Amino acid sequence: MSITVPYVPSPPEVVEKMLEIAKVTPDDVVYDLGCGDGRLLITAIKKFGARKAVGYEIRKDLYEDLIRKIEREGLSSRIIVYNEDLLNADLSEATVVTLFLTTSANEKIKPKLEAELKPGARIVSHEFTFKDWVPQKVETLSWHKIYLYVFPDCSNCRKR
Ligand SMILES: C[S@@+](CC[C@H](N)C(=O)[O-])C[C@H]1O[C@@H](n2cnc3c(N)ncnc32)[C@H](O)[C@@H]1O
Image (cartoon, rainbow, N blue to C red; front, side, top):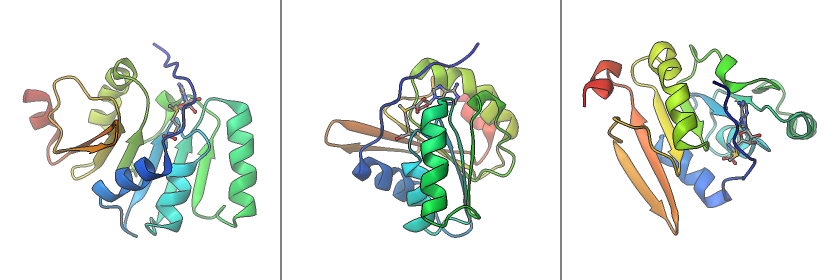
């Protein structure tokens, strides 16, 4: 049941577009599940003024580099990173979840999103869709696709 996805960073313009279409504001708590070098977390805080950003990263080397970067940039009070499997994440305070995984990984995490996210939470996925969910928005940036899903009502998402 575990998720294995290699490290491929989202290009900076994709990172910005993901946070832009999620309409991230200072009220938001942004989770990046499989956060790599932390670019989504850092951009969410520095450019979009998110209240807090939380990342899960399974690779210890990426996690350790990111912790050093967060300390260097003085962001330790606003960014929390766990060197843990993203399936262990507690998503109850997330208002925005960003993902760049795979279609099968999205299916594995879907029940967790449905169980833990609050109504109104936004999910932004770089490149990969969720089967049976209808995105509210699809953005194309050169050859990249970004999908925005909003949770006005999870059961609606399941029915459509
Ligand atoms: C395609 S990269 C995306 C990185 C970043 N989110 C971005 O968009 O630039 C996927 C990341 O997920 C991490 N990852 C893969 N499986 C994971 C798991 N089960 N739990 C936590 N992180 C995982 C990988 O190590 C990698 O850094």
